[in-house]
Image (cartoon, rainbow, N blue to C red; front, side):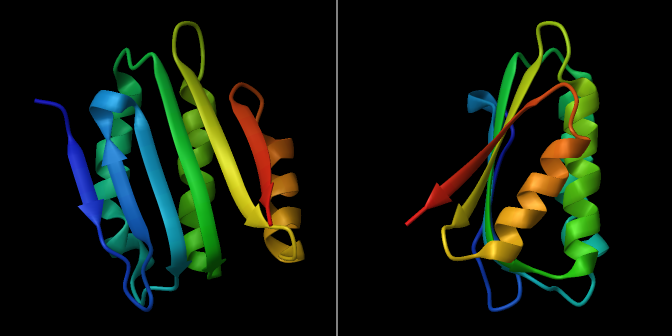
Amino acid sequence: MAFKMEKEKTTSTPYILIDASKGYMKMSGKSFPEKAGEFYSDVNNWLDEYLKSNFGNFTFDFAMEYYNSSTLKIIMDMMLQMDEHSIGENKVIINWISAKDDDIAIESGEDIKEDMDNLEFNLVIED
């Protein structure tokens, strides 16, 4: 059976949706959990295994309004791992979604895009 996980957002953690059968993951909201590594461990564990498979196409929609440095490190590690596995028949698409007035998020997205070599990285600016 395909893996599916959904976590509702809280005041300090984001909404997370993973649907492996659709090759899709989304994170949105705010992320500043006290123990970021612990909070994201199940997502990381799933992603590690998923990226080792013949997954075909995978899309990650990242629409965070705010995240702390601990979260950014974890997300960056995830994206670098996705980039490493976006080869051959496996294609990863990251949609970095930011509000048009969120200069920090836009700049962060531009910086991260420069570190990605293999995957498709789209900077999506919304009104």
